[in-house]
Length: 184
Length: 415
Image (cartoon, rainbow over all chains, first blue to last red):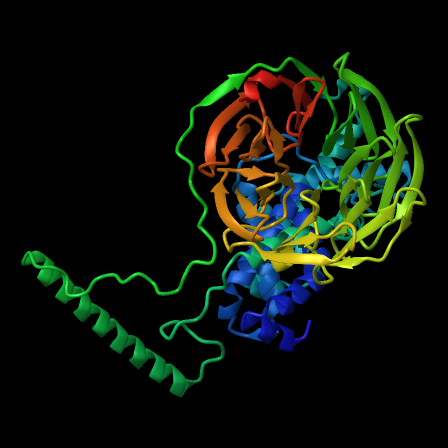
């Protein structure tokens, strides 16, 4: 991303804006996919954030903060998307992404367990965990990105990880039970 | 786990899982949809009373002062207008029509037309239908990785032809006696299937991202959506000829194609134009600008005195072009998204998608008034948005929401 492109986009240059989002699309779509765990909704959320970015970019205060600002729009669009009633008759769920599958069956099972546990988290906790572990942001950077206090970020991370651990532990106990005693 | 799981264990596992679970690239249609949407969406410009970019202290004082002056002037004007109105007099100012002529008519909202329910003659299950064309008495339906052939006598899928790992939701399909042609924008391949043997006869690399495909007497034509071109292909040799440039390189370029009268038509959303090509000379004979309220990203229906193009999922309208003057003469509000208009009994029909699996409808445009004059709802649950095809004495419509192809009585569509 170049500051000059951002400034051009702020002046209404659609080509400059197109260049900016072309560079950012895959990363932000992945971010939305991880938060929402639904490729169709992630697509909608990312596009909605981009359209909002185009409308709002003339009012961006600091061109150097474009990346963080756009990421925040995507996270907010994910929140909005999660509140919408499902529009499609068919919703495609993401399970293992679109990378070549080289996992062993044990690793696949572990992925499924993590997926199930992660999907049980509230969206706000998912968002901070994705920003921390996928985007590799510090708690301070996450707080700035989402416009929330650092203490809130830490609390969401702590509660999110604790909930994940509890879900995985429960899954362990369930797996250890004799087959006949497992719940349906 | 060998021991008790710690928070650090969970965080390490999460980071590794996210790295595996994240898609490596976004679907092309995401950028294309974004470009189409942002090009028709105005930016919110900064006004003197809103914060400017990196505004300094001196400028801020000036801005605040200007805002106060403006507010006071506005307040005085409102007070004057109210006082005159309360005294029963005429307002001291009147609205003056803009001197700037409108380049194209605004979308015409059709009067509410009651919908008639039409019972399907047959419902054929078809998983993930993308596009449909007729080839003689057969219907060919494009789905991800295959072409389904519907036997219109038996009302069932007779066979499926595997055509490779096509995945894009918006690929194109065309057919004649020489072949059934399907594009795949993701792999940049045009696949030719022999309708006799029902086997793939050729896979032809075609541009950067082939989308719309059309067969005419002059040959096969492919819209290269990222290349900004239309590619002529000789069906005798399967060779791609010299590309015809109709728009800029980049996403959301030439989408869908149609022929007639003596022309090839292509819609180009990224520069909001419709190009008209001479199929014999390959010259671009006209470039027609679409009105602001529409995006030329949908399919066409072509008559001698009217060319219709829909706004796909970008704008809920259909535009009428006069092929004599090469100008847009009408824009009709569809009340939902329409993709591929079809002429049935001399009038354009569109399958309209209003966003769910049960609210779709088929609408007819009255070409005399440029408004919707007939609305059909097929069966109890219809999603809309798919292709409409006339074949074997019936109208066939794709319902992607409900994974079906419906056969409807032709009598319900006319006169």
